[in-house]
Length: 305
Image (cartoon, rainbow, N blue to C red; front, side):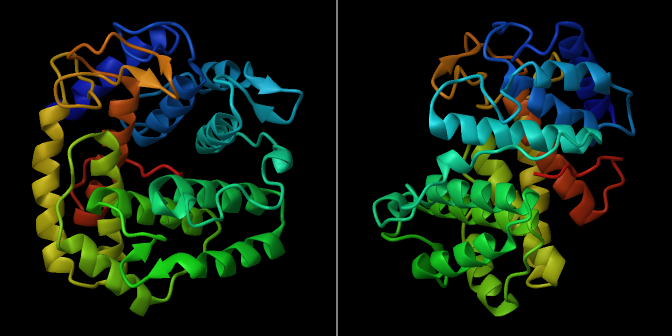
């Protein structure tokens, strides 16, 4: 597929430039860019060989006191970027050992309150990180406790304290699902169907995160063979729309007409109409999920989150 070839060509240019956020981006705050690139190297490994050792070395430059990864300061940023870095390295086949982020998860947990769960996108992300890290440190009991704790916020159509907008609710479901997938926790199918009914009644909102999160959840329909025909129709429609984000340089932008300007509050690109690492990462992961679900034979690999 020519469009896939163009993505790979763009990625090789990014690799040659030492992992900037875009070919028109800045060479700062690049831990996230390199971590996402690691997943991209996994997705397109059947199409091109990337310098895995070079990617690993770039990511490891941000390891702090052999505990966690630091690029953009702030506790929540460190948690998220450490998760992203570890995930990227695991996708490349490297075992970086256990990162100690326990100091960020002291009781009472900062995200386990009604105010936090009015935004399940953010609260769900913290739950996912919590499950991921405690899984990798072998603390199964803590994860079992967390699975019980979030029951307080579970409804038939998702997790929340006060019902948010549809895209925030779906993004929150996706974050919880990534946590479940990280620890291989299987959700009861009756409960899952209620959430999938809600998702199938909506459409993906614009933007990289919204599209990826929507497809991540929708693909669960295919896994349990529930309303699969409707899910297939939605996935095919989304597939067509995805390529509206691809630019002449081969990469995808986060928004249809511009790259993402900031990442965790730091300026990473001028917002040009061109390919960017974050957009290309999100839409490539989306393509890989659709490729697997619809058996399109694009040769893409779904990376671990």
